Image (cartoon, rainbow, N blue to C red; front, side, top):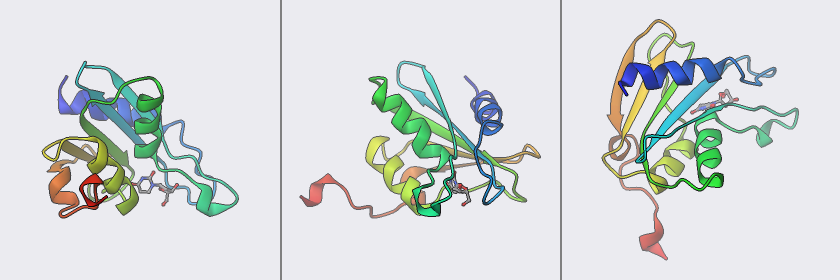
Length: 130
Ligand code: THU
């Protein structure tokens, strides 16, 4: 699968976003080592802090379906430059993806950037601390 194809999955699921408070719709799509694709959109709540980001929806869907070996993830929103994952999502991606996994950043104009999760979250907290 090309990067553009993974972004296309993210773009399609973005349409499902439930974002009545921010009006900022986000879509994410991850690829597992087995080549499976899991998608997620942001889901907001009237109690704002309960809202969930698109990336974590995709990751938790995959985990709950029994997949935990992840290759890369794409995220897309309507932004001037390719959207970047929030800090909480960087931590979750960092915990579950290899350090060199690509995070594909996109926007609706077709701009695309690729960064490794270890670049987006250097020196993370991880299980080695417990
Ligand atoms: N959002 C995501 O879904 N992913 C991110 O990485 C950044 C933020 C969502 C959360 C909220 O629903 C909206 O974007 C505005 O912050």
